[in-house]
Amino acid sequence: MSSRRTKQVGSSIMETLAEVLLREVSDPRLQNIVITDVQMSADLKVARVYFTKSSVEEEWNEKEALQGFKQAHPFLKRMLGKKLALRSVPELRFQRDTHGTELNRILNLIETEGAPRSSTEE
Image 1 (tube, rainbow, N blue to C red):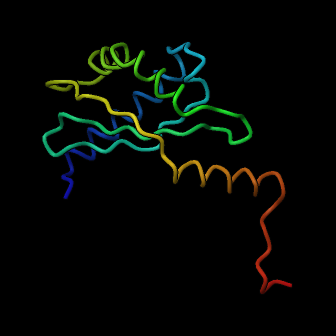
Image 2 (image 1 turned 90 degrees about the horizontal axis):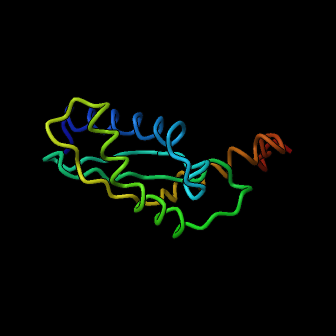
Image 3 (image 1 turned 30 degrees about the horizontal axis):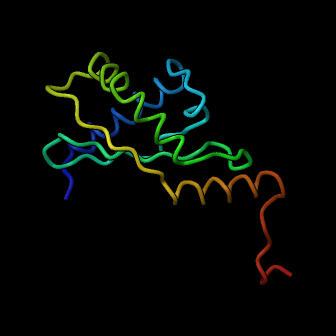
């Protein structure tokens, strides 16, 4: 069960990471990456950060993205420390969001081809 505080911290981390990735990270492996969710541990020491590619048309390698996050990890923690008022910055663990990828694919399909018809509409 997650408390209101863990949800608040997770939401703040998600917003801050999204902004930092967009404006301050130049690693090409992390270009067009979207943070879809952040789940905090009960003690606020670990943040599981879920990500996906913003465009499904582009080819991307999940392992390269994870390597990019691994290399950027110290910088991202430092930026969270500067921008958020937390007693201690949690350990960041990055994981691909497979549900977000599927949702992006469906939304892009609808955008490019229009809403798919159900069999009852014919």
